[in-house]
Length: 192
Image (tube, rainbow, N blue to C red; front, side, top):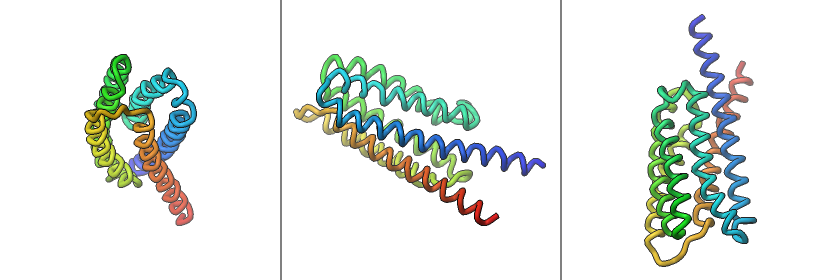
């Protein structure tokens, strides 16, 4: 009976992860489309999108942690929530000065959140499939953050497009994970 309950909890969490990853993809795609289609003609919309992305990440990590056993069991995600909230506030402040500072803040956040995502994926690796893509995503995020910080120190003025490419690549990793979990479900169903 205990094994049955453990499998039910595991299956429920895996189904949640699949839905969560698809949700992350949908939000990121919508954000990237808005960043390229609307933001170039409106600095106010570009600013709102730059504030919205880390705020969304905080909310998404919070929700995932709650659905995955709570913040106490998911410390890397709890830290990611705090980092994303701090980044949201820092971006609001930096938008009052210049885009180079905004990009530098995104860089620092990408490094920290990438490493925390990497930690979450490694912790989940034993229990769930598709975590290899999340490991790659976390590592790539940390590398991109370093590149953002470098770009922020150059005289060139960055735009939302600098961040949009990063968001698009992140969406691809979430899509790979969601599809991997979906295919794994189908294979298990076919094997039964």
